[in-house]
Amino acid sequence: MSDPVPFWKRKSLSAMTRAEWESLCDGCGRCCLHKIRDEDTEEIHFTNVACRMLDTQGCGCRDYVNRKDHVPDCVQLKAKMLPALDWLPPTCAYHLLARGQDLPEWHPLVSGDPESVHRAGISVRGRVVPEREAGALEDHVVEWPGRWPARPRKGGRVPRAAMQGRERKTG
Image (tube, rainbow, N blue to C red; front, side, top):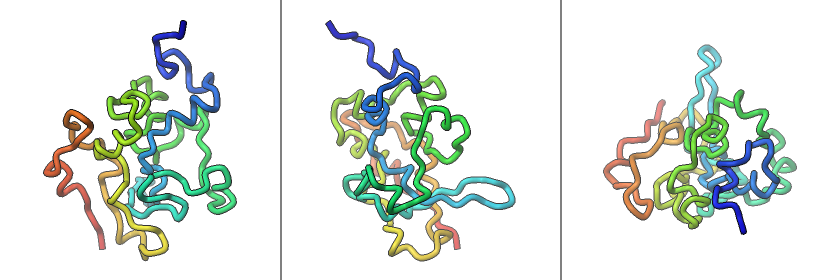
């Protein structure tokens, strides 16, 4: 008989198998957006500019296994790193579990549906610019990747009005 308590509630991040660890990624793509760190304040500014390896529709890496060959500074998350990472989006499962919080209802491990993250308005699908087309990152600063979206409707839907006015460009 299998354990009715999901692995993420009974195991620490460092005790998870590789498959369990990888399944924590909800496929939102927010961590694959370029960020700008203010040199004076150290504050992180999210952009809507996607890494060149991000499939902007599927919201996954185009070559996950070999991503560091294409993007040498791509970060491979490890449990011991999480407390020091200030650039992970607040919706990130790794970030949430490291802080003792649970996975949200739209997370594919909870919903059983990989599309729930998109319906809930969490993912980058339809909201980003490929890095090769973007130009200056400073022209693409937005707030939504660093925020929780409005409460999703049943079925993982976010009211359209709740998402309006969330983006801010500078320049």
